[in-house]
Image 1: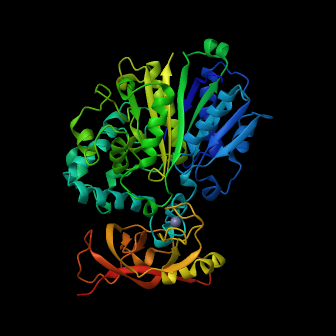
Image 2: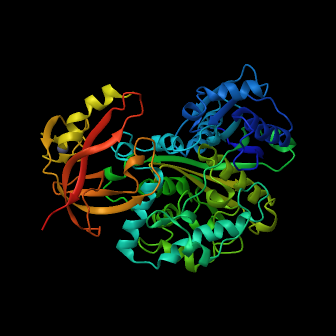
Image 3: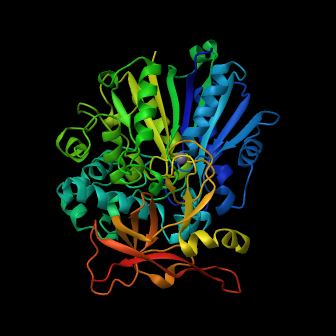
Length: 385
Length: 132
Ligand SMILES: [Zn+2]
């Protein structure tokens, strides 16, 4: 099997980009990734996206994106795995390149949620849940997170404000990310006073939906990896695991067991342990997801994830840095594109290009994306050569 | 808009009808083709008692299209006495303070107004506090 390298990255600023189209955002990210890799010949493009079919009435998005970027005659497919769609595109690209059937591929994550307005945004995003038995009861993804947080608070009794550690960290890190949507800090006090959106979940517990595109150029071509502008990064693990789609269909809703399986497999595949992971781009679509994730990863015992996040140092200078460029919470949450943003940010760290947020000597990074509340979990590990 | 789909799910929604596994007797809701407990084929209908308790709950302040009239509403994960957990709105709360562990009972109520011009109303299960 071939080794898979990341030879180029590109990303657009994240935000409410009313004037931009899916393909124009994608092209900006694609050109960034192609330029870094020395504009090589591309065999395939894998596009990760969640909303385009419903929000922009556009299916077969990969073809639209490739055509707009002048990539005629290549292979293309669009992946949908809920909010993990971008990570799924990366996994598909990884499998294609690793198998040897595809030599060089573009992986693009793109989202354009501002193509719809009002309450119908919730309807479209609620398609990630079990439609017949969750959405039809009036539940939304935000509501799912509220249900998890309420159960967590009742089970373990952490101080309520301690659950703000992750969003506060994300905002502090986003200040130094020029692509981030919210480049400002939030205080513990502001977190504590934020309005409830799904009691007990408040406004700062939820990552803001956003538009944006990010791209990776991946290849098995060692020569290309040498001529590229930047030193290549190797993808040393790629795993994907599911849990029941509906929260109510799980024996323990707080277990996030797909995270456990996905991470164990990824560490084994890459042949590393947690002590060798220099940074972890975890999935902070909601603060409670981050807490349950670190527990399911085995970084903290069940019921202790809030303490691990609140009391240990997870800043870029800390023992295990998290959400180093602002995470979904403060970089912004471009849904099906977010998994590719995580990959771009991990590459920035491994190359030493993360500016004020640089994790010193970062050699190995883990990134993890989720569709729904860990309904599917896709984990990748990258290593600097 | 989605009439065939609602017709298909009517029994499950009106009567909380799931299945009992003919192989291991597991009670299953919602109905599915393979028993989650033993992997056998599941097909025998089973009407749940509708009794359960609250596993978790939250208050929705923003709703998808079709649910706005009920705002704000409380939605819960209800652990049924027979085993499975369901997602459902709470209703008839009155002055009751909702708590995790609180016993509840299923009732049939209007849950959604479908968005087409005929304004189809969809009925299904909700849960209310057990009286007394
Ligand atoms: Zn069975």
